[in-house]
Image 1 (cartoon, rainbow, N blue to C red):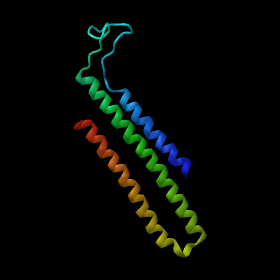
Image 2: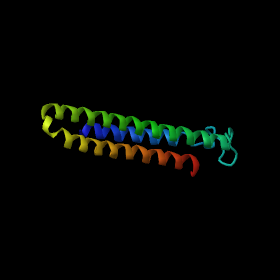
Image 3: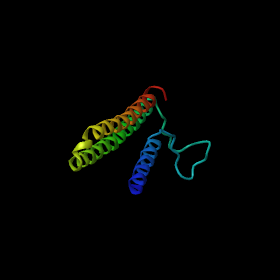
Image 4: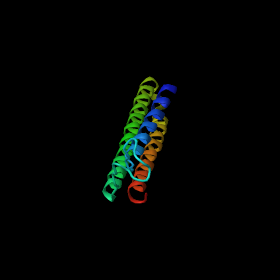
Length: 121
């Protein structure tokens, strides 16, 4: 369990770093004067839109994939438990559905954050 939490944290950090790498900046050649850049890459509105779209896509894809794995594990464990003890299948189904709803809520929050990235930032 601790290993999976570390893996998810590492993956989220990787997504954040990739998002930062897509931020457009000015490029300077080595050894050039600070006042006069030898090579200048001007940013335009299209670069920013592309960076926002890529970052939002990565965020939603990552969270959806992790949520799908979480739901699959939930269903697997619930079906195993109901096979072992059929008399608690009703209560187990209710708890499983509640857990899946919480996982789906996290995915919807990620979608909302991605929409904020694209349209507000």
